Image (cartoon, rainbow over all chains, first blue to last red; front, side, top):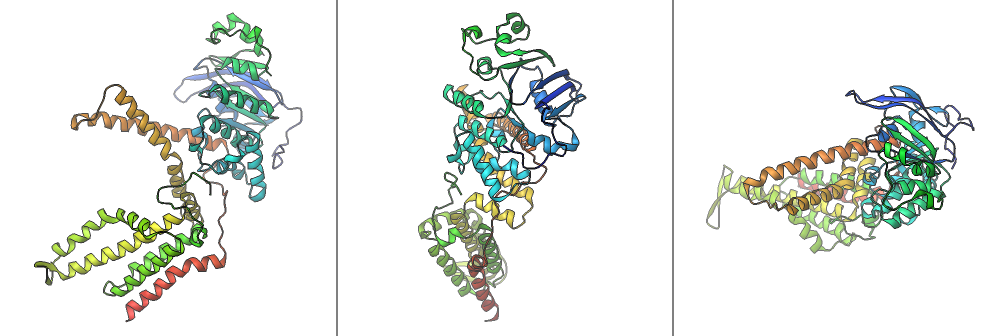
Length: 262
Length: 253
């Protein structure tokens, strides 16, 4: 997918999709959620962000497109620093898929919902239609374009939610708990779709087998800092690390005996 | 627009009235109602002509009379007041079936009843031939404040979601043996309503977050531009213009 307009500051080809350096953040009530987070994600990588509840995952995600502003440290997307100056461009480049598709899909029909992002960026007419159709085809939902979102199944809504951000031609797709509330078939369909996309993915999840299936690399966020960064299989197999950060595999699941999915 | 979007007032069809752009129909209905209201109440024949005009529209839209009349019933609670007028108004009295009624009150009641019914009938016809989504596009096109259009559009989108949440809360209450039986239980219902409000408020915040993440900056982007040709406008405006002619006759005859 090509970006519709040249970036205000052209992204250099070698810049990683996402670079977070020394990111710290405290909520206005004084609760400190992030204590210096550092990582980078190269173009085309699929990375899982793992961590127990309350580790600061959601806070981190909201920094990636400038909804929250870092107390210290920087976030840059394809070389473009996240800040007040380039907010519109940053939000186009970072596509966040929220956990509840009913929050994400707020327009009366699927088609209008997918069109929302690109239309807000100034796209109109035939170009807009083409973009919407392409995004819906990528998630296999083209024939549902004129349906209202609340008439779709949960899995279908999640797929449309992915399409709404794909339509913006993002540099990086950020998924918050993509497999939550999905039945096994929808879960697999979503995995197939995510694998077929040519886009950088950061997936925030508790679903460790899903992370292993889709993401060769994982980050563990614990108590507001990155506690581990490495191949997903190694992280899941490291029992001490897992126990230290309240991560648990489902009963009977052994990451060492599962064939690599990604 | 698409399937499955129908509300109960809408009646699917492909008549020329259905095909008119929504903003033309909105403007036509608004002008028609204004003309009707401006007609002197003594010109009773004018109201009969208005009714005939609406009947013509209903015929063109292939809306059956029964459908239209049944939906007119919504008016009943509002016109109940008009029935009281002849009994409570002062001034010159007249005898009808042994009852002493105010002449002024009778005219007042007729006025409310006739104009109200025509207005409701016109709105029912509009709703029967226009999808909700289209109505919103029409309002947007007619430059209604965008905030109002957005609120209405979110009501359509989230009405079912919130009703569903309400249903789940009721099931949860009943599963724990609760049954609303009279005043003593109103406290529980009030607390449920409060919880529902807070949940909806929080959902509103999450939706806003999702909107901002996709580049929302205070105004909805234009996705569907509704346009009308001169022919469509003149077709839609036939109704209020004929009504205006009747109205002028009513004033000058």
